[in-house]
Length: 638
Image (cartoon, one colour):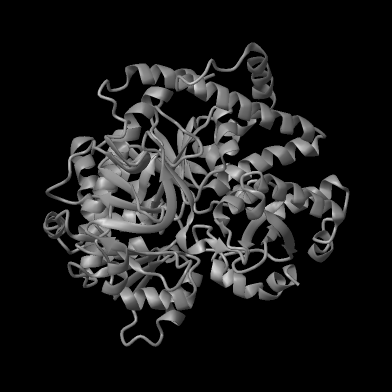
């Protein structure tokens, strides 16, 4: 079973000191309250992340560190070539007037130029301010004004227009360059007369304590706040993640590690993964979209050995497999394959962890059959070479994790926030435990407060919110960051997230309900797209549910209904409501009857970034959604 045999081999060869085990677990009256993991990488005392390209160029100038897509061909970029390009763009920024500490905003989707810009800004002594490419003029106005960014690099003419509109009233609008209008060429030409030594001087003046980036939160509960992250924060995250994962993953696959980045680089997870890959000289490619139809061809062309995604990606791959099977009349067969995968994955995992005998002969035979019919197609969807993945952003439904495990793709879940420089916990590679988000990242501690709130301490924790000492004081206390999330630690120090503190619903009957559990399970079952569980101060729990457009198209085709059937008609169709009810029933299996969804309504529209109901990291903006669908919510209880 490919990756699983190799995993056991890697386990036998692993560091005898137990690299992936939690260092200390503290309990109070039989309840685990704190877990700590010792750092694997020494805390940096000199230099900065800006040094990475130049260290690579000096130590391994011919090593391929990135691949750039040009005309359908992925062309290699060596360490020496990348360092030269970073230097040239940094010189352009200096020539444009950038002073050490100045902020430079980057408003672009994930692409090669983003990477060049990030390191060029640092090398010129600047601070990068990521802006999501989907941001509105109002959002851009706030981020540019709050950060004081004097320069901004956009991707498209539309982005440039958004910036122009948003900053028109600023006393000093930022200077703008546009990637689609050859921004890097323009900057390179601008800096031609600046000596390389000026870049070197600015870069070497940086220290671990220097501010590297202002990352603005996604704003699910209000105006975005700028998290101040230093070069030490970025190094602590990247270096410890590399030391934890890279040696084991190379042993598992016997492949040169490579990944295709498609998460927004404006999101801290995609950004720190990129830094970690360059630090370890892991080949990187870029794809600007997470939409399945656009991502699949890129995955098949690049063929990464590992992926970093969000649950949405894995849910869509699973749904595509089901839809493909249904088109050829084998929907029931796919459902059996799913059930076999969950049983096989659980049994196989139990054996690898010393908790059981493993799959019996009959289960092995069933797995082998469906590996031929189904699971190998799942691997093909991911490019054919990927054997492991990291999932973050929100919890991955446990059965879905086991399905991919049985299909030969080990998914390691992590948990973190912008304030923790991405992952604060991560499932260790030799001790997977689906359903949890893992152990503290090396060098990090996790504590469960008396009210169940998760708190985090360590080198990855940010220092403050930009221009907002009051908000900083609300979440930082003696080095501990109060996440606002609720969770628990098991006896081995693995963290499970159970909900969001501010999102807890209290029904009129006094029952506390965490909507996250229900919402995560709902989204994992077609035809559900996005959803919002409600019930605060109400007699029971209910849900607003949107339909996934791809699933709806497939649903219509299977039933030989016109592709143009109005959504208003589809949401009233008893067959569609029955399909959604099955998803609701599945979600309710995870909770008590008092916490279960008693009623739901199907929304004709969608929750999207464009209509302001989703963040760029695909989280529902609860307050905005409740306001947008206030009438529908009232109707559920009338």
